[in-house]
Image (cartoon, rainbow, N blue to C red; front, side, top):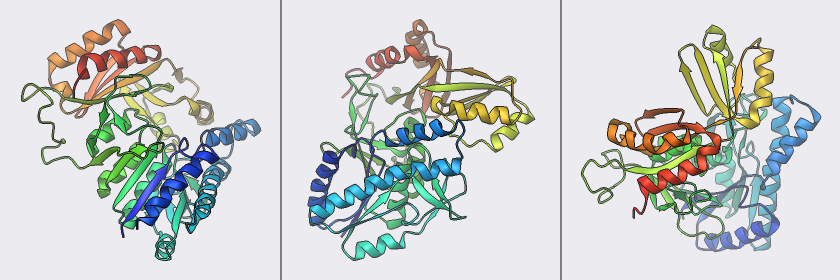
Length: 398
């Protein structure tokens, strides 16, 4: 009997009826013989509500106490799903991150997994139970409750799948899988049935909300087979797997010429705050103790640019001032669109095509890496940029 890890995001367990529906579907999988380990996020918007409550009490809440508060959300989800399975006649048991053996470092709010020691999960699976784990959380080496940061439930699921030797890890979300762009903005975005680890990692780091980059890193490092699918249909989704020896998945027939540039997908990231600091020894010390996730960092001449999610701005302002940094600048008007594919920037004609399309939208900056061409634009230009790039570069591709 195969072990299968299934992770359900906040929108998937957003209310009691959704939880009951998931339990009914899972009962079929259980009776087919699979050993199930379920990782759950907090119910939709719960974490944000708890976060807001903390900031109503204190403008700068203790990160330890914030972790204690935020982990309550996943405990609610795991208990309700366990109760729903019991109503379906399925024996189940729920565990917090610490009970399930996810050991992290001591960094509250953005902890890293050091190891997994999930012997209790093995024991309960051997007893024929479905095991439900609270995602997003663990316990530090000093026995403190920690959270793994944004997208932490994805990371919990992939880490457990690796430790348990699971046949696969299924990530259930509110979309059917990975698309060539965000289908909520680009209605013509195309479903991608298979994607390689490296392209998925580039998309995740570029702002794709389907899966968190830390979880993709873990899957790539430990070769965990991942399927991203809809919790509303349970239909087959996008399979994330290793690339072929040449470095990409089989793209035969996806270009008219042997060296056509192939854009796998287009990601975007908005709701960002840009911090600009003087790039000096003080900035280095600030980074050594930085606690919030950084989306992007660049040094341009004598300035250090740091991009973070806007929701962290209040805490970061406090941190910078606490460390004696008074002259930083802030800007929340910039956003990014990223084309993901292999060798895109090595063709000046392709880059020129992209620049020509984007110049009317006030393109601010363009840079590249091995698998991405990154464009910085005003935030209000992002929807139009996504639609235009998708239409002109991906178009009617099959």
